[in-house]
Amino acid sequence: MTKYLIFNNDVGAGKSNKPGSPEAVACDIARAVDMYDSDIDDYIAYSADMPEATFEVLKKLPIYSIELTNEKIDSWNNDALRIFEQIENFKQNVEDSRESLSDAVQALASDARYSELFNEVDFESQINFDDAFDSMLQRTEYVFSKTIKVMFGIKRVNSAEGVTT
Amino acid sequence: MTTYLITHRSEESQLIHREGSAEEAACEIANQLLMFYGPAEKLMAIKSDSPLATFSLIKDDVLCSIDVTKKSIETWRNDISSIRTAMNEFHSAKNRAESILSQALDDLDNAFDSSEALGDFVPSDDISVYGVLDELGLSDLETTFRRALRDMYKFKAYQRSSV
Image 1 (cartoon, rainbow over the protein chains, first blue to last red):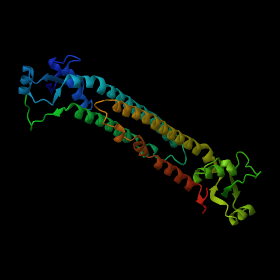
Image 2 (cartoon, rainbow over the protein chains, first blue to last red; image 1 turned 120 degrees about the vertical axis):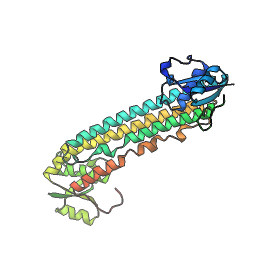
Image 3 (cartoon, helix red, strand yellow; image 1 turned 60 degrees about the vertical axis):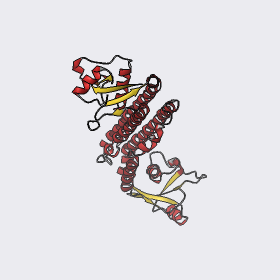
């Protein structure tokens, strides 16, 4: 089992992990836990017993630490990524549904504007589908993030706890 | 302004409202407001000052009354039916979304279920397609629509239990 420290990467410094390497997997996992708010190049991981990790820690604290085995890496590549694809599929369906409902409510609002009886009714404000769909997307991402966090035992490193390499 | 009493049309009745008549429009409007589970042709509109209206009231056959004018019938034909159609299309879009998202959520559940490491997680325990879409405000939409119709046509429901 190898422990990896994951840092915010300074993209301008030209450093990155080799795609497919355990370090890159560690960054992928961190990105999933962060619910894909950042780009993969925004993370960089080092094996905790390598001098680069010590050097980085002297400059700044890591954001995560994770212990990976070959089994866990296989599990990420085989299980988690497949689930991630289904999540992306679900999110795409949510976006498509949002668009289709948005078109329908706009058509309704447009008819209402020319209606003698309903021209003062604001149908668009009565239908709050943005909140509904945002909530669904957030829950989906949260479920995946929570699952990945538990499954891979990734730990958020904060300044109060410090870092041990 | 004419007040119409609306009753069920009996199966044997040969009396059919003329196409484009005020009676036909009155039945269509009542059909919407009564949430009558059937076509408007199954209803009959009777002018409130006719002997047949008195007879229907005595027999307790009247479902509701509505007031119409030439202008309010025009509004119904030109204006309200297009809103109703747009609302129905919105309902259909919502039903399609529910169906697509339920399937996608099932697929997601299955993906977790078939995973050795992640099998304990069931996304649908945390995400509810029906719950979320029910909060869209569709019932408010219906309420607004029906309230506007009720006010415009002075809709009055009569005490009957089987509509």
